[in-house]
Length: 57
Image 1 (spheres, one colour):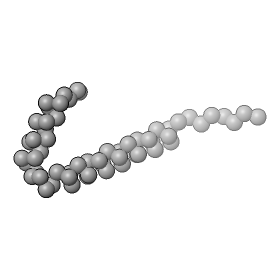
Image 2 (cartoon, one colour; image 1 turned 60 degrees about the vertical axis):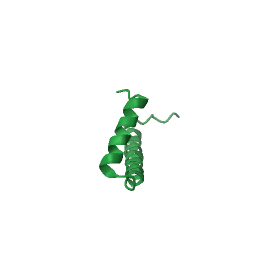
Image 3 (cartoon, one colour; image 1 turned 135 degrees about the vertical axis):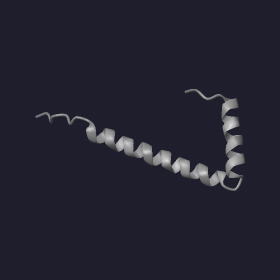
Image 4 (tube, helix red, strand yellow; image 1 turned 180 degrees about the horizontal axis):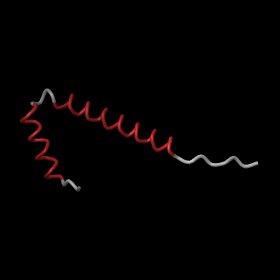
């Protein structure tokens, strides 16, 4: 799914109309935190599922 510059502008314009200029920074901050927590959780799951290497003697 590739979004071009024009599509991003249209999405931002619609968001501005729907939510208003005062709510957009709050929505962006919330979306950023959500994405960060999702990535952090996925990294944790991937780290837990890695097979442990047998120790060499």
